[in-house]
Length: 126
Image (cartoon, rainbow, N blue to C red; front, side):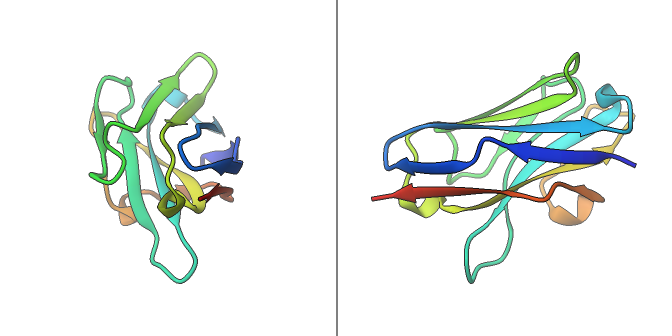
């Protein structure tokens, strides 16, 4: 089992920045691949970004490339999502997700992740 707690959401103006954190517990964090997904009102949950167990493998949705950066600190059992140049269309509930792994691989679909946080709201005003 992996327990996840997100933090760092809030209200920001377009062009601004936010940094989300996701703290994990329950497993050796270096054996956990992580991902961020988001869900806007009336829309399906969508992939945002993922990172492998060691942190040197990442993959991004095209909509956030060049604006968002994922990183992880395995000594603090935490993954971070730095979001810059935010747009109103980035408004959503952001969820972190986890998968126990023993290879350094990234995963882009929600079905790949059995463990989810409760979500944190990000609202970008125009």
